Image 1 (cartoon, rainbow, N blue to C red):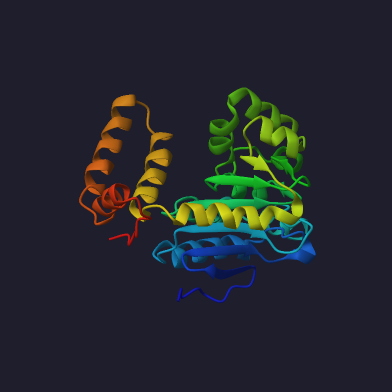
Image 2 (cartoon, helix red, strand yellow):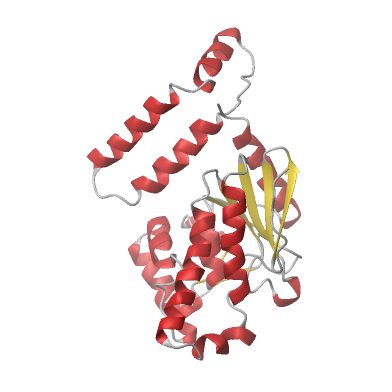
Length: 269
């Protein structure tokens, strides 16, 4: 049983052993973000980090939106902050998104409707994005006098779609809909709205059948190797990870299962 805190803007449920769903829970406000929500991302990340989950799905409550960015009714709170206070808030906000991105197991974003501004940043922090046809993504920061250098968006978006496409999306603040998002690699695939959560759960289940250590080390390799500047450093990280995995119980179990033509029983030890 995961000891998850009682939160105001987020909910969590473990839908089956080792798979959880984290919901943004402000459906009456298109799941828009608040100062409180950014604090709660961090609390959720801390609670889930050592939970033993194999995969997490992040989605928005209700049928209307994944997350429509920062709640416009709270935007004045930001404008009234002094520079130091605002920087502290930025560090809290980015720390919250980072705590989701850096969970040691895969995170799947199941996106329906708007995923704009900070909502887009949250979706980009996931490892995998599945989208309903209703998807509308926008890096809308320039619309409110801010830059795309917000909540990791400039980093993650550029690495997903390339600098030229990221520049166009960021400078124009235009809406990217589902078909284009799939075509340019912003989402992995588009699935029918009524199947979105089932598809995400199916993918999470498929991930959970594999070696927990292998999956976690794969995530670490992918994330770290987008952040380093040389092929040699990437190889060093990969080599170290593979060497560590040979010391686990799961690798000999996988080899034995292959030889015996059976399904392996992974324990994560």
